[in-house]
Image 1 (cartoon, one colour):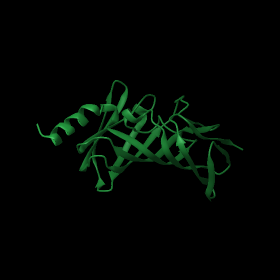
Image 2: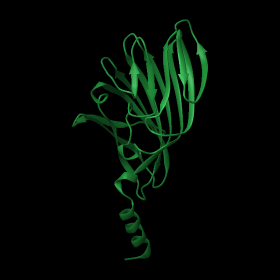
Image 3: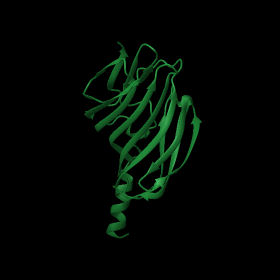
Image 4: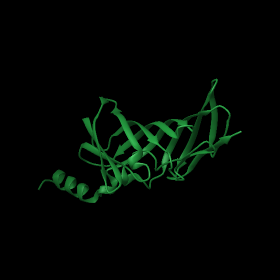
Length: 205
């Protein structure tokens, strides 16, 4: 066995499944409608490959209570729309992505998932939305690589749209970027964020 082949074999053996990818940054754009208790969202996940071989497919997961309330609409990366499939496995939504161009070894790529959540009768700290309160945490409510679920994010940017009469409080930098007749839009930016960290909460004034 050549030295190069031996090194590759050792690297593969030393790379556990839990290190297939890590999530470097997350950008989230959401529209919250308290009247209908729905969330329309777009999650941008900047992924770092931890593999020494190309990655052809990637599995993302969404756990209860959101798994059976999610509707994935589109998934894409820099190459365009991606082929994907979604199915329930033991009350968890498995979203399998197939890259049009495999993710190269130790490379970086951003994947975007557009989806909707129905939050009627959902009681969770990750997302809470009704006519009296709205809150979002940094993880748990959008599809995500299971193996990266416990890692900190270098940066999270959240764009959120809420009724203009609601008062918004954020745990990090908050900026109102637009105010319309019925809705106001905000941008929240945080760095070195742990999973399940509260990003903002809002209530009617």
